[in-house]
Image 1 (cartoon, rainbow, N blue to C red):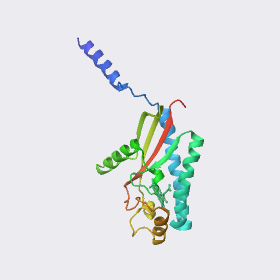
Image 2: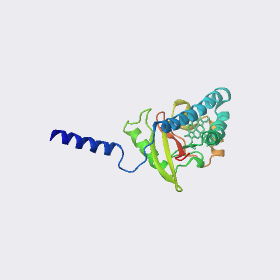
Image 3: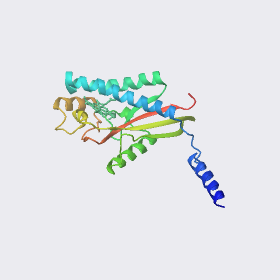
Image 4: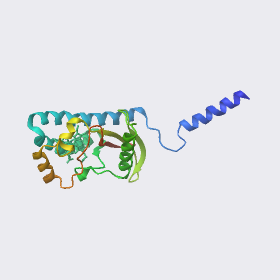
Length: 195
Ligand code: HEC
């Protein structure tokens, strides 16, 4: 009898863990590909941003965060066949506004931050469909660091010259008054499943 119970429980466990929700399993290779792309994107941006801040100051660096980010997005898409971008609930550039899925996850990240549950490993994978195509989506929080406050902090932290430039270039700028440790946004990647 005991044996049957054990067999029954094993089958039940196998069914549950194999995901009876009908979602496609995402294999580790694909996960790692998306993780690496996100890391590469973030570090590349920061590697350009920090020296520019040091040498040219925030006014020069603004061009980096602005133009380089959009350009990187384009280059990465061509090179890796992944659609990669930065999104936020409080955007500076309207081009970085989240879609419904991204918005939901960004809200989740913010809630996790409040509950102190956000860790460096925090990430979300999901298989879904976009315009009839099966895709894998990946999101990773972007955390505000001290250096970011030069352009995303409060009026005392942002140089007046920078404030002037931001006001001119981004009349709808919401990406201010952040504090160190806040979720500034997320890296969002979409990969076609049959690619
Ligand atoms: C020199 C000024 C400057 C600094 C420093 C800076 N940013 Fe930005 N950031 C910008 C500008 C300008 C944009 C608008 C980019 C665009 O047009 O796509 C932006 C956009 C973003 C976005 C895209 C969402 C949005 O608001 O449009 C994220 C995410 C972001 N920054 C995160 C960071 C993080 C994290 C840091 C620190 C590591 C940082 N930024 C440092 C100027 C800066």
